Length: 408
Image (cartoon, rainbow, N blue to C red; front, side, top):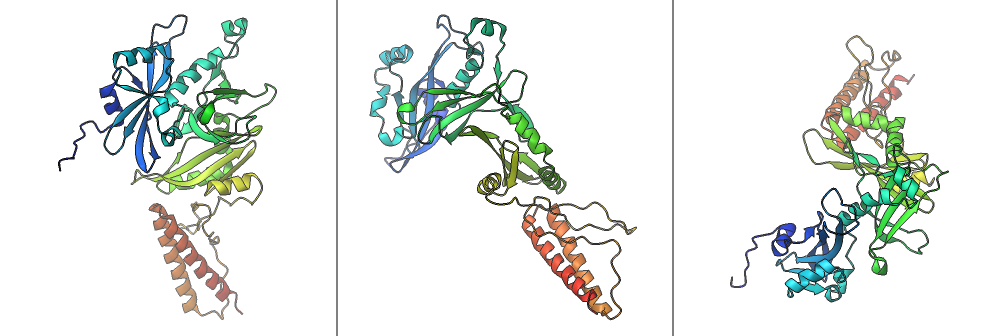
């Protein structure tokens, strides 16, 4: 077709960099929908290492501004560079060199401006500097007596620094919720949370930063402490052990601290991944608020348990106890929470009354054994739906057996 185009640079960062290689690009371009079309928004920075009386960041630069928002049409690839900070002398210089490259931010359609968010790359730099430069007293700063750290979290079974994350929260003193980028801090060599830094993205508040500090006489649990409390919860630990023994791997996602009023709510998703598949599946959501911890199938259920609107689901459901050749029970396994619990099979069952037909009893025993074998096979395959169905079949057989053997 005469109007067809061949796009050589389909990756958003590659396309933007090819046009403006003098800009430093953020690592996370994001896709938005505006006026029924798809657009990529790529944050771009102007940087310099020659700003006077300014500390370098990781020896790379000591001046950075998010002066450009590059918008890429996801369908036909047009790139528009909007100048978000026209007072930046660096971008003004580039604009003088390439007068047809940049567009004032005022010309960005309103449907696109609604999706602009504070960039994570710039926020990381600011948070790293702020954990030292929040100290305004000279003696305190010189001795580094109030140095802050970024807390650690357990992400996919690996300890790593907590990353900034976007949430919808109500900033203290504001009447309604807003979209913000937040990162909590902990004191040096301690795990409790003592402050958080948030960058705002909505309307006239875009670009402003808020630092919230907790009173020093109040203990606020930090992410590492919440992770430890989750590990120490006996029922949650048993459920994790069950899944790990059934041929699956438990993967814990990002731990989010969400400020609510004068307290913090922690939320952590729990994924289950089969050893034969690399596709994690969301199975549980853990919510912690102070000393309360709940793990349910959905966020709504966990919140309901935390705030006392419903009792917790018992996450510990005993599996049938298999019997060894010597007649002694061997350790069983535990299916996931919510499955139908199977009654315990005694190693030495009570003899049936003499009036019970032996053929019926033998048939029910065979049905129960077949259901149990099928349930164990489903558990090894991590097929929990089939596992629950077989437990139901096993329970029905055992119920009929108990009714039959108790008949006079």
